[in-house]
Image (cartoon, rainbow, N blue to C red; front, side, top):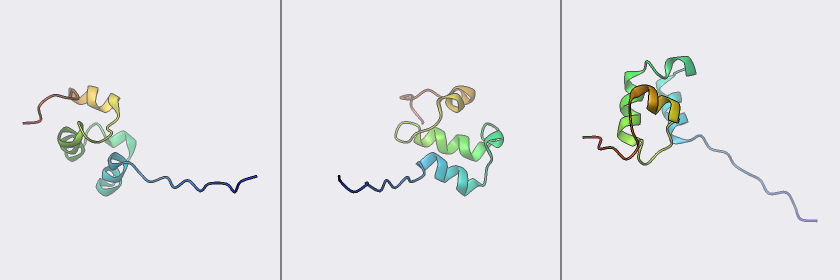
Amino acid sequence: MSDPVAVVVTPSAFEQQVQKLDLTPDQYQQSVRLREWARNNMNSKYVPEDLLKAWGLTIGASTD
């Protein structure tokens, strides 16, 4: 038998941003700073789809 492999789970960039902003899940949608971060990063970082929809953001759309 082989030895078990250790799996290191690191927070996603979205989770790191939420921690940095000290937000709870019920605060995500109202956070202007999180929405702006999501708008600037949605094409390269994971952002929950329900938040993108709530903010009217579309992946692949221009962020300019």
